[in-house]
Length: 360
Ligand code: F6R
Image (tube, rainbow, N blue to C red; front, side):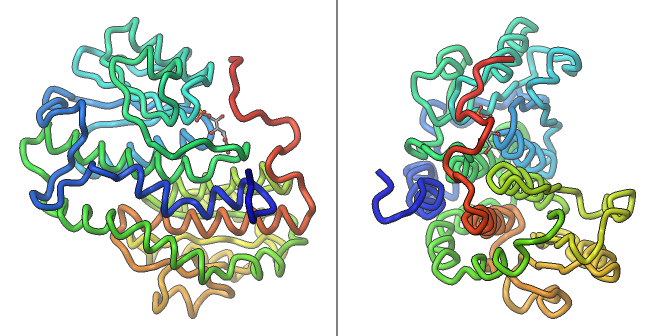
């Protein structure tokens, strides 16, 4: 049940320290500075030349996150919407690994893409929450995120577990393929182990409710981020629109000036996500919106230059760029939740939506 919580969504947001610790359990070998994935011996991915991710919705945002980590680690990769795959799949060969990311493992679009990739001769892997799901049975291999059941239609804890597992998997693929673990792997693993505690602190100290309250009668809500902040901006906007029924859009920070700026007014708050990847550019992009009257909410650590420049601050603990966006995402989940609650929306079961979409 929901226990002390008004909604499953808030319960599941609050569970993230535990669900992430479960995802990581036994998968980080700190003594040797290595990633330990049972079923995937070191060297498993040595022949992987390129990776295609296929997924929908929130899982697509996690897939994009994983794909960016892989590209940054030097492995060719791309994230594709599973529902577009049938008309526009890039070519695959025996050295292509296709990774289907799906919380339920039952999404029809994602299963169709997985089957198409298998038929085309790719190796396949699924990253899923559900043991025994169709994706887990049909893919060559499965990596489970162990988030536990998620009841709220809006995916929350499963997104963070997907993104963390995909980050680990990306680093493992890169280490297998390139022969050496990346130089900064040990630091990343230590930061990963610190994530549950950091999310705990963030949840305790969050100012999300006040921010949701102050901007709750805005016209439209924008989310911007660069690098690994970009998938988080997309996810922040998806969560916001699906449970508040208000218009929200996510953009790559640098895209704002290529069109969307025309929409910016004092009625369009801009949530700017800072991950430590060219933050000075993102700050400049946010300031361009602020000049047009938009309130800017900076999602960044205390002491960051954006704190003084912005109108509001959602604080995240300091960490490495590979993980900062995931902390920002938790703050944005809370903003969406409180905004929807103020508007009295049926948070756990938004209109027109189902937890598992089993038609194409
Ligand atoms: C959004 C949401 C959906 C799902 C999408 C894919 O909060 O939950 O966008 O992410 O329908 O579902 P799975 O991950 O089960 O394949």
